[in-house]
Image: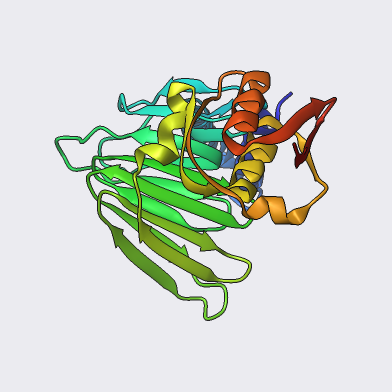
Length: 281
């Protein structure tokens, strides 16, 4: 029995327990006892049926759908409103099985995902919720989100979005209206915020099995490999992490990616087991 089924049965039991006192009335005259009890049983049965049906309907109709990816794996997903999501490696996406027309559309992301959101005739809002209580509010647009540990990065390809941030220090919410080409990074642990203009395709090129770099530090690329492919990073000289590079490398295969990075950085990058070793040539 899964947790959802167990919770539904417990809710039905609680509903039945609330109705039982109605069936235990003993103070009425005996002449009316039969008719009174019969009516109460009928009412109780109807209420229990309505409660049970409502719970089971809610459990089925609003069932949570969960997709995950392994290290190095990407998935293309279609949401209930026909919006498209590309899920990067080591990531998780969850949402309700059905979206009512009068409700906001909502998904939850852990890891990295690219969204192409469909606009609806009734202007339904679209929310992307993240584990650090921040969120992105959308009407119709394309954007990339990376939410790992305490760090959230959002880059906007087209349209408009509102990036909602819960300030851990003063418990207030900040809202940043983003325009195409803008990039926002929020580090919740230190409560630091960075906003700048970028080439947004560089941040979402992974969905086309390619990584694009524009004066990107090796440190950032190393973190990407660690989070997306699950490799432990071993660097014998920390100064190497400050190196910057512009270029591209294929990302569909970790061995090919490492070989490409070795060439553009002119370094020795070697995968051994679950570790990536970085050293000068």
